[in-house]
Image 1 (tube, rainbow, N blue to C red):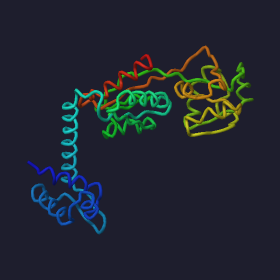
Image 2 (tube, rainbow, N blue to C red):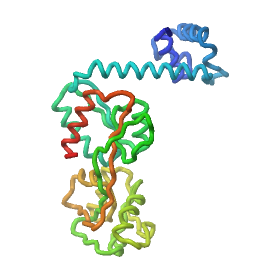
Image 3 (tube, one colour):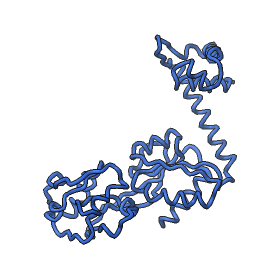
Image 4 (spheres, one colour):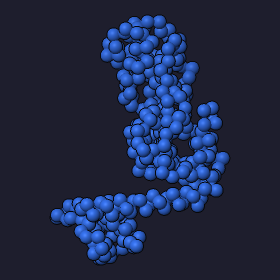
Length: 290
């Protein structure tokens, strides 16, 4: 049986890559860190290679670190089982893409007001970071527009979200030229979204690159402000549009075709969701009618 304190020290040292900082982090002496590493290396061989200030792990060191992480995951699963009855107390972390996050965050705050014992953490992130955050156990739940192809992840349909063509209130869009006259308010995913939707609404159009750019923002919560001021149009997801405060200043163009994305709820499949997380998911589904 490996001393759990030695394993913890080794894990911190692998992150800090410095004996002094590791000792400070753990509140012990540097000599104690060195002694614990010697004890481990007597059992498992050389774990670390030091060249000056650089420190790298040997294959044995990487294997031991993986073992320590597996033990930590097992402890987390045990904690979930032991607190399964506490569905309204404790921490639940949710990471999501921007558009759905704008819709969910106020709902999470409503739920936390109803249950003072809950601590609900939410983070906005792009799809790739959503997956990484769940895989690394930083967040128990994730919502992404890309269904992960990873055996460690459980994915289920959370809701559907259409793309919308959004123009200033009172503007009529009957042709491609009407869009040219307005100009495009771009954003990081703007060209991809506009291409997907406008290629179906206006088949045979000259392409998004032919549209003049009349603005840009990388903040989804602010993107519709220039549209509301009559400075151009944009293509955006439904939940981002519906969360905008000045609905009277914008208009969604009704189209005969639709581009609808599936949003996926993801979590680690190796262990069950905590009762707290299940309660959060049920509440959010009920509020979104999904």
